[in-house]
Image 1 (spheres, rainbow, N blue to C red):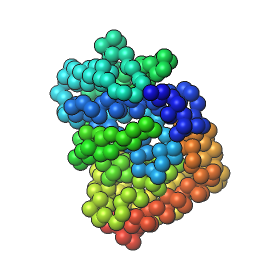
Image 2 (cartoon, rainbow, N blue to C red; image 1 turned 30 degrees about the horizontal axis):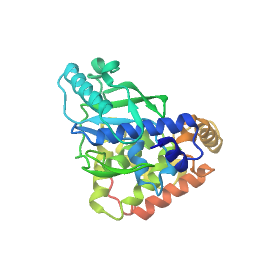
Image 3 (cartoon, rainbow, N blue to C red; image 1 turned 90 degrees about the vertical axis):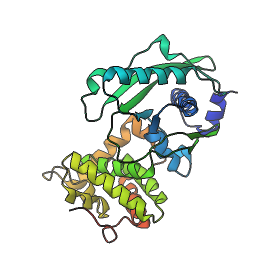
Length: 303
């Protein structure tokens, strides 16, 4: 099997470096999915599964959450080591061979991350794809107070196959986290993601309640006034991007922000089919909220 040829057919516009990175990341996910370890996939690899096609949204980082609580960093590091070694030595018929983790075993930040509100460790891995050496990194958060159960055995699609994930982040926290991020620091990429994520709510009142509960908890944790949540559902662009300095022309700053975000490598790579102007991005977001029933008229928001 030649994974490079398979992926190139699905992603003809990707550079070779990006293509190899995507193959490597999904090869890691494929192996991890077949093992009995309590690690939950999150981030853009999950988000893009909700888009009409995978080419519309490409992943950036490879993010997991270690589910069991760990009392000390040695226990956390031990679990991380066992998992990484098992994944990198597992076999999959995908043309990718990982360097065993034991050949360079390390995790950044495990010791002092234990005291953080959002502890995250990171490691670097290598693999070979058709004789080419490829590097990738893996981020793992742990000891998170998650107010939800993971989704179990959800379908995960790649350019070459389909398999199930034992643990993944459900739709409600994905939406809530991106709405919270939009309050803290609005990014057009998140509005683009939200416009597709909320389409899967499909009028589910329980799901909407879960989203608001998680969003409220996130705001309380960060001491964001709960009244600010209204801005997310007002269908007014100014309410979302209200952080701009009022001494300068609002639209000028918004255009500068849009131009700046569009020029970043991550933005241009992860959102290749995003609309060409920020107003269309926002209108798409606002319309998707309305269609999903996420409007000020329909929601009971916290005070």
